[in-house]
Image (cartoon, rainbow, N blue to C red; front, side):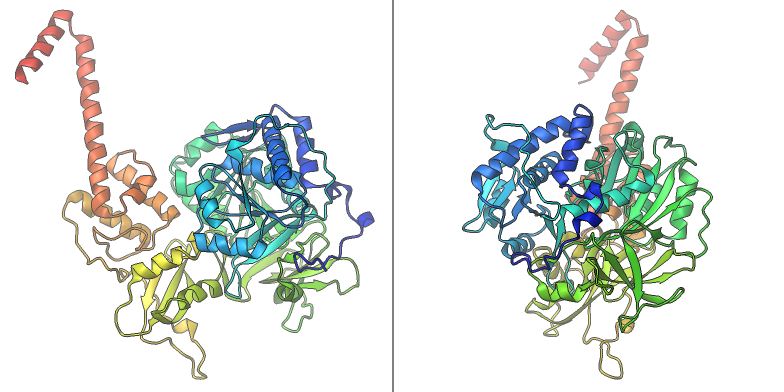
Length: 640
């Protein structure tokens, strides 16, 4: 037993492990650097790094870490805001042979503190932008390393430290079914295998330009990093989706990855005239893919482009993949998650743990020697979820908690969660953790959270609360409290107050009887105020349509109405079409009410009209003689 992680120390037999997985992540990365040192590895609006530049920066960080820390017994936390710096920092930690723990600047202090208390890192690697936050989080014996202030004399050469492929690479915290986040422990070998099997079907390689279109959380892009492809991250909560198509074409992106929900919103703003000839793979993962998603792919993308539906779990990595082309026909509404991939055997089990046959629904279990080590310092949960190989081999079996059905041809269908775990915006949420946070509020007697679909089939969380007293509970205060405890995607978008929770005849909670809030306006502290101007009326209609509400007051907060970053992109897109103004996504969060946004739109319209008038006058001046121009200017001066 590994005393630090509390997970089994049993390892795969070396002779049965493929050669490509008998190395570490830095070994694989440095191979890519040697082959293409001057080729682009990473690019954002702010930064562009070649493989050699990225490697040299990572080497300097690694050497600085080793000067500050001795031994590899405890992990190192990484709290970095800028994408390029985060990538160099995580690779720098890995080069030392120490596992890292990613912290998120966007997550509340309480959640980051929980992760730090659990993992007890010796060091927090951070940058100048996040340094003050890191200082607040750091425990007594935890040091800080600001990578923006490294000594320029530190060598940039490779360290060439021997790192076992069985060593811990990172510990990532996911929402926990017990009401607390749990840390999944991944080894170098597990990461290498997962990324290899994930990109082999579409041959991700050095000539590809890969983008992950995500919600905004900074994550190390291992898929391109370990295959030699260039990484181009796109964050929806910062950039929106209105200009994504133009950017994909301009940057000649070849591999697109996102959740199905983001994909649907992205495609909804396409005109049909875009030239995506360079794009050869659309990889959807994180949520269920529908047949309508396949039809959208067939409508908007070339016959040379493939659609890949990927089913994966943090504890396992890639489990199944389905490669779809223009000739593929999907029989049902839900798209299957695909066929077997190397070294990951899927078994379906009934409630007694017995294997079920074809066309029968059972819990999806994965047998492999390339699983995570388990859960950090959670021996009980690890032993519950990671079972020994029933054949007595060196593999393990992981119980995913997902339900599935195997078709006669070996294709797997996904049938949702066995428990109450859901995915919101492609990110895992354990309902118990959200409910636990709600029940910790003194004014809350009972709380239940469920996931509902809105009119666009997007899932959102609805919280049903029974207050301690009959006095009205301040919804804004509840939301603010949760924002300090939970990751943004875990905060419910709607809050419904009840006198009591509905029960079944046997006294159990009747979740099916919880009322659907539908399109009714949420109970807000702000009184409803109707529109006063044509601009406000148009905005009210746009907001109501996007948020699926019957009415919206001009002083209602976008976030309090249930808005999120994807909904914001839809609002901004429709505003730009309706009012013919170019306004950034952040304007909705800086002016989060209809009244304030109407002012922003009016100001932009006035500015654009002023610019058009100036262009008209300049055009007239160009057509005039010198004498006519002098007379016009003199006349304008007299009129002032």
